[in-house]
Amino acid sequence: MKKFVLFFAMLVCSLASFATDVVTAKVSGSTVNVALENETTYCAFQMDITLPTGKSVTAAAAVTERLAQGINVTINGAETETPFVVAYNCIDATNNVWRVIAYNLGNHEIKNATGDILTLTLNGDVADATKVSIANILFVAKSSLEEVNLGTATGEAGGLLGDINRDGKVNTLDLTCLVAIILDENVNAAWNIPAGDINGDTKYNSLDLTGLVGLILN
Image (cartoon, rainbow, N blue to C red; front, side, top):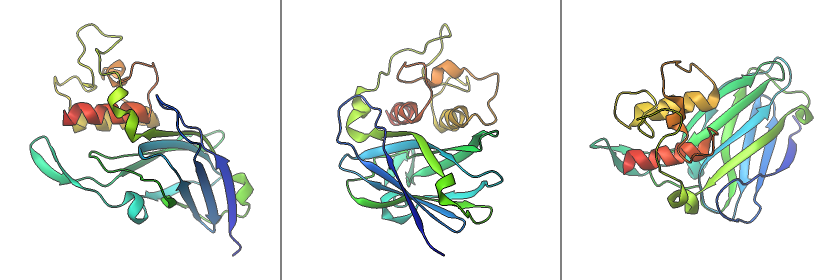
């Protein structure tokens, strides 16, 4: 089957100025491969992918050495390997828009190179690749991590920044909560959601994920 290649200018949203890098989506059969050609080193990303009506993501995986390999770090007193975690959810059923995020719990990086960073497997072939589009692309630069504002939580008096599930601790349980908030999936009304706005910009995205990882590892 003929392979189709779509090119998208990448939107870089961070706290410093970086070279413009390029995201490429290659659609072949029931697979969408997302590649990144970058000069900047990144440590997290998210993007919204619109699929044709009736198509859905059945699996998402980190692929190649760019995301699949992790390093060992100590988290909550235990050493663990930290490859990238990939999560996804349909955030707009009417237009069939799927949000995909990727992050890691260590110092693993998407270094400057060219190649696939993600594979999406769909529930059937895509006959027309032009019906697949990517928008709201956000990559977090490794160099911007120290600039994330780790101040106090807003919106709730006495709230502990990062303690989304209100257990008095900031750990990987809160990271799971933040992923749910970003993907708008199974959000618990009892959570302190403003505590997940780590950088204080009133938004919830991969910038907050990397900031929360920093709090957990601090």
